[in-house]
Length: 141
Image 1 (cartoon, rainbow, N blue to C red):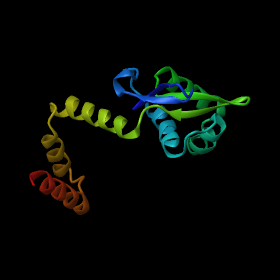
Image 2 (image 1 turned 30 degrees about the vertical axis):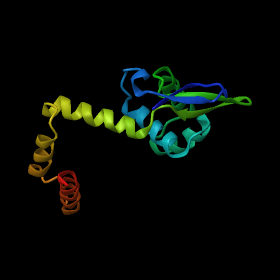
Image 3 (image 1 turned 120 degrees about the vertical axis):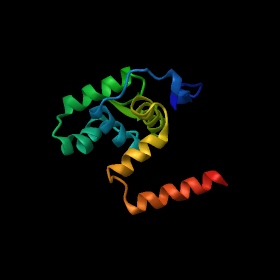
């Protein structure tokens, strides 16, 4: 979920529908994963985490953060002479939306063909199959 400024001056949760429909790029997603794990963070802290692993400079990370702010996926909060960044979009909401888009786009909105494809491509481990069987058994009850 996203947030709006509340009476306390701190961001409050708002519905995912209010988030910009513009999709989050792979690079922006890497920044979001860092923020989901440890927010709030400064741009330097984000760069120290995700930038080093990907070879990105601080200006690159700041550009990605600015894009995420414009997409209303991230909020900024002044902290002295710097800004703290925190996700407005919950990871679970993001995963749900991206999963739905994948299934809709590639499998006509049906999950069964996706599972069939993964099984045929031998992309499912025995552990994956056991988890899917347990999930299906739970859904049947």
